[in-house]
Length: 401
Image (cartoon, rainbow, N blue to C red; front, side, top):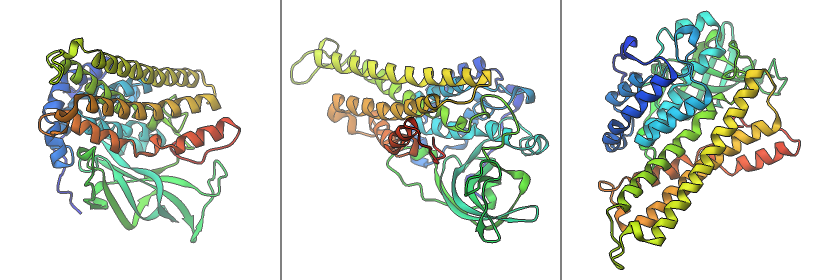
């Protein structure tokens, strides 16, 4: 089918920044524009073309592209910082950015010649749900793919749409040829127009992410356009551990909480309590709430970046990921999501009745965004059980840890 929201012509590559420092600076400069368009993003329930082009011009979609291709190849900490910055402007834009830049990571699991052909430009965006919800029947030259996937964030503007599947051979589950697992999990990549897109994204929050359902029946996908996270073709910290696509996710709640705190601090400078007549800047209650929130955000942020830096350093040395290392990044990510939501909710309560007006207060949108993003698997309590099991010598089969 043809998407109603077809991508517009890509930004000329010569105008897009190509170092981590330049990309991050361009993102900081774009924050006011993202805030200006936040209501429009939410109302349209996907990123408008001009916002997609703004992100493309920042260098978002090329962020993980390898330096060997001329890309900036941001490390996991820089990717998280980029998403965090964008989230201070708009969380839905940050969510789509977080998904879209996976093009640079996915390309490292494909044969070099195939990846170059599929990604002829650095600024191409990916989308898709990699969890194995679909069925891929092995046939000569590739797979016949069928299934229905949810949460296709950014699929209204993506260049490639991924779909996670279990592989079948002659109607039976095929074991993983590398890990020996009973099931072979593989990611299929095709053009978005090859799928049927279902406009299902009517949600409480993150409305602008356009995370629609998509489905297909008996689509042939060539072998070379598929990959397993257990067999990277490119080496390095972005590909030596399968969690690279998850590491930057914490940037969304961290940036959202930062924006909410800055908003209420600005409000406190000019607001006076209606009942007591005490200026907010002098009110012990307000002072305590803001200090507590700043403390919690600083702690959550430190946990995210400290664990990412430790993991990155170990992978750069060529060390295998330790149990504690895997657990640390997963728990820091979970904690960032939960802390971000708690901070926004606390500030929403502090501001009171003025928070409820959509057109007057961004706190209403941030609260809804916070609640929706916390329904993602990485922010669920199951992560605590999984990480606890691993800490005690067990194993996790979850693709989200």
